Image: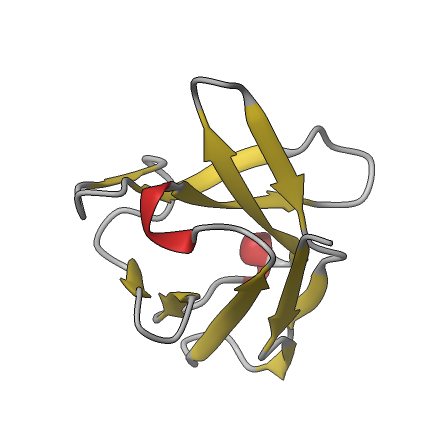
Length: 117
């Protein structure tokens, strides 16, 4: 049974930092691309950051220079370090594991991030 369990969300003031974690089980973690998505109320889910199995990273323009995605294959965990947070970063953040062939796609349950003073 595949499980992706996010943690680390919460309430933070603008300019603050949070570190999200996503622990995976039931998959060969090292071969999966790992993604962080977010969904704000009334908006579509958007891709925030990606890290490939080889460690290459990519970011949405809105978070470049502020967010950092990383992975620890020994711990089957992907992280999202979020710095200089803004109110517009408020959303539910979801962890996603993706493998191309055969197609496999798994999601976590989400963790709430609220940026407010």
